[in-house]
Length: 214
Image (cartoon, rainbow, N blue to C red; front, side, top):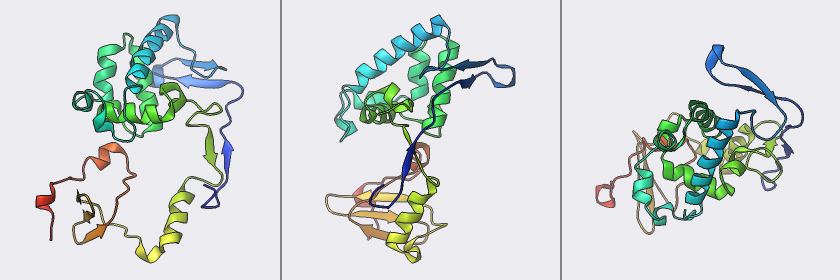
């Protein structure tokens, strides 16, 4: 942020908060704590679910998630399937869906559970990932709007080098180079940074190097 000359400010989270689940007919509750006003049963359910997930987070290799024990198994399930198996109450399942949409912009069924664990582990756990309290992942906002990140980066590389309307179709990578293919062009680079949501990133094929265009 400092390098781009952007300022941040803390999320406003003091006072009464409003919590609404269940669609138009759902109950509207208010609360002042860091987590919503849930029933004792749902709070018990939340406690046991967070305990299980945080234990798994502790096993994740953040730098290389595929080195995580049982990585293939964890990646073969979605956040939704894990919640379905391990949460007891419908309210908590709906609550976790709300968290997924708020933080990741996707439904729990669209996200690999391994990806979720890696993301949560990088934040220090599930609650630090979701909360806006001091030291948590959602603590700050960017003054003037988050779009300034993209605008500032575009100015650095030059707007003439920004390709719009050029969806990435495939990415190839070996020990030295990466190739990024669109419908009309192929770009050679040292590394690739993928910033779109997981369900969109998954639409970019990752063929083997043998399939790479010359």
